[in-house]
Length: 100
Image (cartoon, rainbow, N blue to C red):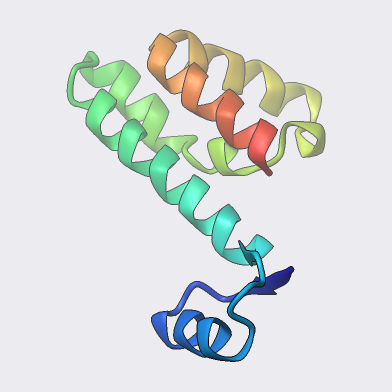
């Protein structure tokens, strides 16, 4: 088993050097891809929101990136309101939390 960067060069090297090894993406890249997916969903969903909700989501977007266990009470309340804006946003946020 090899934990590795996701660059193509590393995959080629691993395939040639350890052909039977199971390759696993490193934690940094998994986190980055999860946050990128969350950002994409947030951006897309914001287009269908009222201007007030769109501004609120944009101003507090950093809360979506924070781990739930690192939020203070005020941030948790704001995050709950943001997630209530769209069920898809909540699903992706929960997926990110489970993954990370």
